[in-house]
Amino acid sequence: MNKHTLAQLNIIMATVIWSTIGMVRRFIDFPSGFIALVRGAVGVLFLIGIAYFSGKVFNWEGIKKNLGKLILAGAFLGTNWAVLFEAYQHTNVAVAELFYYTDLLFVILLNPIVMKEKITFRQCVCVTLALLGMVLVSQIYTLDINMQDSWGIILAITAAVLVSGVVFTNKLIDNIGTYERAIPQLLAATLALVPYIFFTTDLSVVDFSNTQAWLLTLVVGMVHTGVAYTFYYNGIANVKAQEVCILGYLDPLISIFWAALVFGETLGALQIVGAALIIGSMLFAQLRC
Image (cartoon, rainbow, N blue to C red; front, top):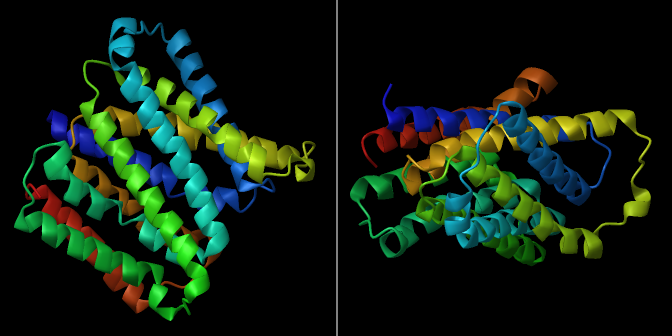
């Protein structure tokens, strides 16, 4: 298995894990912002523990060399979490998700500037197929969108831009391993969330005695953050920026199938067509999109 294929599998593994977070979230009776803060902190501690007990020797020189980029990427990530949470408060989740996944469009448009790569016809096909697939999968066409949704849409697009910032900044980081990427970025992301939590979350409503909520939040921190971001950062260095985003479209796709399998939610014909379009965009990506 070559390095590129292995990197793609790492991104896919991270995406598969993230696709289950919505189901787990349903059973956590904590505010979203609080969950995000705890998941970030737990993820960092979990990875530090894994690194320590596995005898990992950190490349401190590499971390020092890339420190500014690591902090910036982490700040992009943490701000992305906060902005997306706010988008959910101002518009329908399906609307926010659709505009959030325009990150692929921003990556394609910014790629010639940041990575000095030309926009190709195949890339345009990938974007078209993936976005059309997202429209059908999200069923946004069934919703009544009005001016009240505009602020939520703007926030979701902002979150998409921040995701592209995470991707591009990581592409510019070099000569460090997975843990050297993951731990500083998750730490920076967690710290970036602190002001958001302070101004938006009423911690008095948090039931700190809720054992189930705490256990599941720990799962989200260790698995959906620590393990998933380890896969993600292990793959991102050897996959093109646009491929990272296209593979990320597996997240909502798999989430729908999880919802159908676990909760018995109906999967419509157009959603199946949308899924086929998203998969089609990934096949185009394998043709060196």
